[in-house]
Image 1 (spheres, one colour):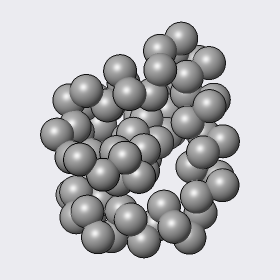
Image 2 (spheres, rainbow, N blue to C red):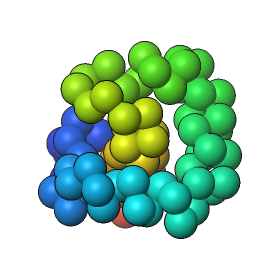
Image 3 (cartoon, rainbow, N blue to C red):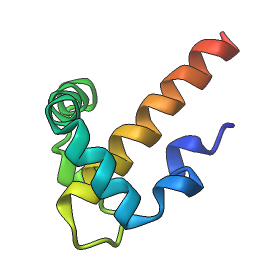
Image 4 (cartoon, rainbow, N blue to C red):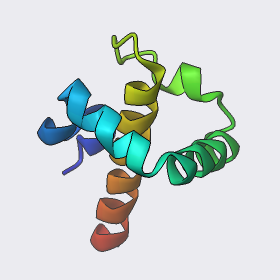
Length: 78
């Protein structure tokens, strides 16, 4: 659980699945990206430097998923 911030859940490592999820909810993902940039005070591209995927939408999806899952786990641990 503690490593969720550093890895993307397995099902979202599939680029095609990530693209489909992003396309279905792109507005939500874009809003979340803005929120994450404000929360972390880092541009999203800096936050995804560890993701070696060329497709920006896949990287956005993976960033939001891993960060929000980490938030949930940390809330549960409190």
